[in-house]
Image 1 (cartoon, chains in turn brown, green):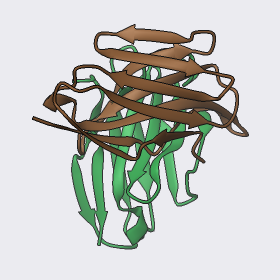
Image 2: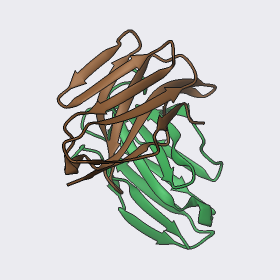
Image 3: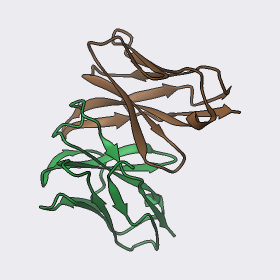
Image 4: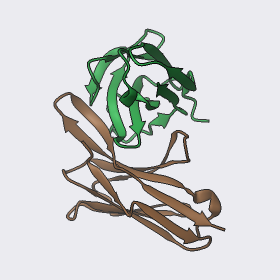
Length: 113
Length: 116
């Protein structure tokens, strides 16, 4: 099952522009996390936002969370070619067999220099 | 470098065979998670162990099994392999018992499995 769904599936921008990715989820959550994956590499944790938080910043990253709409957005400001990667949101899901972190399908970001 | 070590990095094997993927978590981390990433299924959670005990289970096939040893390293065993099992298998680790506690989960670089 996929709790989080990212939008858009792919995004291509010029260096220096801002990139916005969205994530929607289905059930109530405790927190939502964003991860980055360079092609064929492992995932790197970027930022976590708790359900009682509305906005969080980390460097050039800004994450918002709207629990009423069950959605989150990741904004990368002043993008660089090195930001080219896939970005995933991950949400917690309590299933029959325990609590697990469920990832969305991801947004592929390409930053052109 | 996340501190999570996975071996082998690449593996090519034939259908019907059995392979073992190995994972060493970050020093001090008690939880180990296994994920499968493929083009058609995306990133799928397979199973989690915490301090040697199974903690959570996801979409893990019966042909697959895992365990976590006393030294906290983990192995994922894949048997009766099919072409569709070709994927990137990730191990991840964290200090906490719950994946959603808010503690960072660190991912290894993955093991590429190709079944031919």
